[in-house]
Length: 95
Image (cartoon, rainbow, N blue to C red):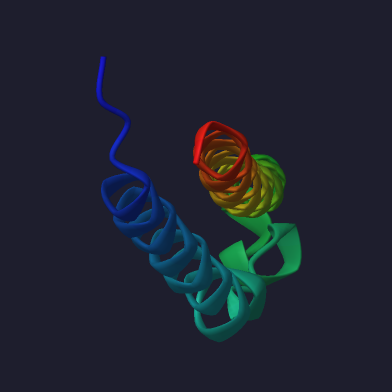
């Protein structure tokens, strides 16, 4: 079996980029959305509050997704680095 650590690093870089994109989306867009019952008007207060709750939930979930992508990228990098180190160590012992 062949392990391609550079390919794993590329995947980790893509996951890291996705995490950064998600972070920017939260910071630049989702976190700025403000809506609630008061904004909806007296006839739609309940629906406005429900929308606010869902926007807050969405913001939290996208933030969680971003963290998970960043953690996965870090784990992939660490695993690829450990594999490369072990490979170098084994090669040195054989030589």
